[in-house]
Amino acid sequence: MEFAARCTLPVLAARPDVWHALSPADAAAASLVAKVRPGMRAVYTEVGFPSKPSHDRRADRRLYNRVVRDIDDFLCLSQPASDLLLTDYGRHGVTMPAGVDIRRFNSTQGRHPRPVLLFPAALGESRKNVGLVLEAAALLRQAGTDVELWLVGPGTLPSDLSELARQGMDNVTVHRTADADELQELYATAWVTVLPSQAEVFGLVVLESMACGTPAVVLDDGLGPSLMVTPETGVKCEATGASVAHACEQAIELARDPQTIERCKAHAASYDWDTVVTPMIISRYQPQ
Image (cartoon, rainbow, N blue to C red; front, top):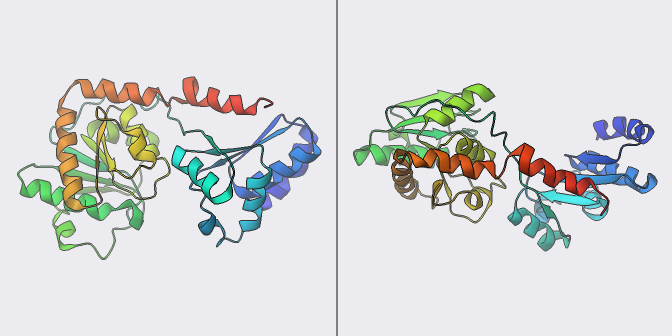
């Protein structure tokens, strides 16, 4: 809110054509400025789900309601998010996915000699389901598939891991943080990126993984990541260790196919920032 208050007067003085906001506070300010400065478009990107019950519990609920009502364009990262906006608020949103710089995430690093599962998400966030990935690793090893597991993300592992998940801790490498270049190499050298997270509005790490030629395993829940993955670029599963393990086994076989790299990269190119997503966003900046 402080940022929105500080930038409102400079924006009025600068007379921009567009104010593209990324938080409810500056989106509310943008919609207000657009009312007093005809010709300026106010655009807001919701990076999560526009769930009314959830937002009604927040301190900024009145600002959010104002944004939903007044903003010129309300952009959602996936169709399920747009659908929820219509269901909960009666407003039509514009589905506008996030993008990936396919020139940056384009490592030529070869795959690791042994199958590697990569989990690039917050370790302590329960909905990311790191425990399921650990269980899957244990089950794969029990079945004779010698996999390594790389955990890349902030936080610490949950204290309530199942006994099976604790067995999966063998041969695990934990990277607390990784910059873009390091992450690119991890994506490219891994065999499978595993993100069995729940309530994921988009799943950018899945897209970055595919841009590096690596298939993904995601939940088959009809949300962001599951809409992004095709049979040529990954496998969908249920939220159980056994299902994640089976999907990883299939994805490992997918990774053995040399054509999978180019198929994943080609699919990621349909989300390229420069050639696809940015032109879509700019189209919303034009007078409607």
